[in-house]
Amino acid sequence: MTDFQMSLIAAGGVFVVGVISYNKWQEYKARKSVERAFAHDHDDVLMQGGAAPERDFASDALRTEPVLDGAPAPHHDVLIEPSVMAEPLQHAAPGPAPAAAPVPAAAARLDPALDPVAGLPAVKPDTPPAQLAENLVDPLIDCLIPLNSEGPLRGDRILPALLKLRRVGNKPVHFVGLAVNGDWEPIVRGGVYTKLQAGVQLATRTTALNEIEYSEMVTRLRAVADEIGAEPEVPDMIEVMSEAKTLHRFVAGHDAQLGVNLASTGAPWAMATLIGALENAGFDVRPDGKFVMPDKEAGGGTLFTLSTNVTLGADTTSRLTLLLDVPCVAPARDGFGKMVACAKDLVQRLDAAIVDDFDQPLTDQTLEEIAGQVREFYQEMEAADVAAGSTRALRLFS
Image (cartoon, rainbow, N blue to C red):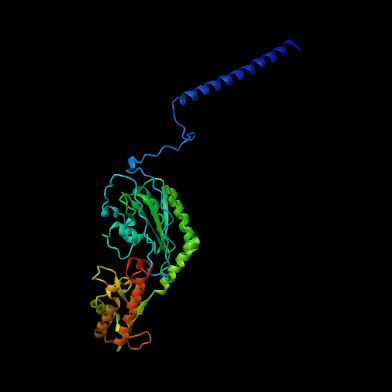
């Protein structure tokens, strides 16, 4: 081996030793830097033997971590057990908290999308929040889904997420919250809630809640719950479908509409003249051509409607039909009696006769017999806890 080769080997050895020494020095410097950065006494919550420290909600006006009650209140079979009331919403006492400032009703309803009254028929704007909540999420006609959260939820933060889920199919969805005062209330800005409940209506006049709609409801509700930091307690689909079908059978069995016809005893009526006569009789003429008899004594709503039985462009008609939507008019309003009285008044104004669908005269005796059947119908609905004209009935027969 020549001297030159020995020199190269020696130089290579020195280089290797230098590289190793440099790497060791860099590791030493990095270790010392890490030790200095974490030299303070921090507790590692992952290594603690006990539970993690409780989050302080003092700044949120609450220091409770409520645990949601058990399964939602069951729906009772309104056909088999019409006299049994559904269980009310559970009002669990919230933890100690300073009194929350009241939220003015007007402030809560500045945005029409947040107005709980907007989604409820036959509800007045001054209805107490607790009563509104019972109408919004009704254990008799809604599938109740509790939403469990680890801490209090503020209306301002959760409303944008809740407003993403307002309807599945043609079934409305509503939310209520357990406020710090211990009452269930509609979700409004400025409110603080220890529990939430979602409710999807089990049936409408046309259909029952089906598997596809319920699956959509659950999927979208889980997304909303993730967004607001909650966990839904989803009822079993088979049970929900059974309740929905039972409720829809009740609705279909009580979907009664009564008609009284007026037939011209002379020449057909000119539409221009007829409209004036109907307005004088108290009807409101809607832009779509419908004639509505408003319930002025009750401050709104519809008593019955009238159809001319012809298209909007027709010049004449010889037949009118007055129609009462029986389950949507409260017994106290005497919708059928007022409809018959209106028909008799129009007979005098228009030279007409009151007839049935087969053009047979309807005598006073026959009309009284029908009135008795209407009274029995109302009693059946009352026994089933779905009083005619109530918010519950109007939601079902919408």
